Each structure stands twice: as C-alpha cells, then as structure tokens.
Length: 233
Image (cartoon, rainbow, N blue to C red):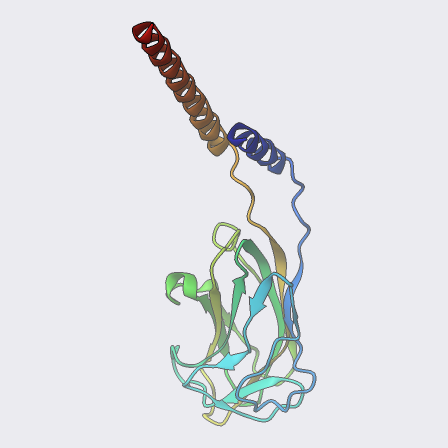
C-alpha cells in the first residue's frame, strides 16, 4: 500500500511539470462606486476565491476627505516622504494557494493644492524600497490612469500576506486632497504545486531504501524461523 501511494505521488508530481501557466487576470478590485470618499475604510469589490483582500485604508498621518466615488484623504506631507501618509491594502492567498501579482492599475486625482509626488512600497521588505521609483504628478486637478508593473523576481508565487502602501507627498497645502479610484490588481492565483524534480528523486530513493529494508527484515525472519525449527526438531 505504501509503495502504491509513493508511486501515485511521484506520478502526480511529474504531471505538474507539464502544467500550462494560467493567464493573468484581475485578482482583486476596488471600485469605490458607492463611496463618499471619507469612509474610514472601504471594502474590496471582488477578489479571487482563493485570495483574501482587506479593506482599503489610510495611514495615520492623513485624514479622510469627501470625494464622491473615490477614496480620498488630506493632510499629506508638504515636504518629503512621511512614512505615515499612505493608502494601503493587504492580500493573502488561502492555505494551499499562492499568488503572482503582475501589475497594479488605478486612477488618481489631486486637488489644485494636493500632492505632487507618489510612490509604492510593500511589506516584503518592511516598506524600505520603492517599487518602480518616484513619480511626479502634473500641476493640475485632472484624473490620471496609472499602471505599476511589478518585478517578477519579487512578486511571483507568494504564499504569505503582503501589504501594499501608496505614499503621497509634496502637497502644496495641508488641506489639499488626493484621491484614488478603480484600483485593480492583475495576476494569477493557483494551487501550490506538488513536489517535483529533485523531490521525486528523493521519494524514489526513500522508496527503494524502505523496500530494501523490508526485504532484509523478511530474510532475517525466515532465517530465524528456520533455525528455530531445526532446534526444536
């Protein structure tokens, strides 16, 4: 029975090597369609069934502000980056799943005295490094569509929670607002693959070792039984 189970595992592991990668899709989205803009937090609209997505929230350094159909804030830093001034959300794949995040897309709009620069960071490095550099916002109050491609060497096959923060700063006034809308993340969520490759080789070696040990034990039992029969005779 044990041998059958090990063979079955090895066979399924080899099949996983031939799986076709899943196409990227929207794995979580925040539309804010019914928002007033000044909610303390605002829930996700949709997410992959194997992915948990938190509410959208703000950092402690900014305050909610009105902005119909958006998620808005004021009191942004008027100088350099303030680590408490941000919008944020968290993604976490359910047990047995992993997530690859390809890019983040969203709309943003500043008031005439709002922030002039923004950047993204995440919890994987404790919000130390910028993702995709620093970006400057034109000095107007138009709505802009932004796309942030994520490096594959960092955001591929994550099986742990990750929090993203969108920082804004260099506001022209403390009352200047900045709002986000229609934020979505594109990528894939998939089951963690069964062990393969070297793991399958190790499994074979373990199987052969167990079979060899069992044969040796069986041989010892037969020898002992024969010796006892001869002694009793």
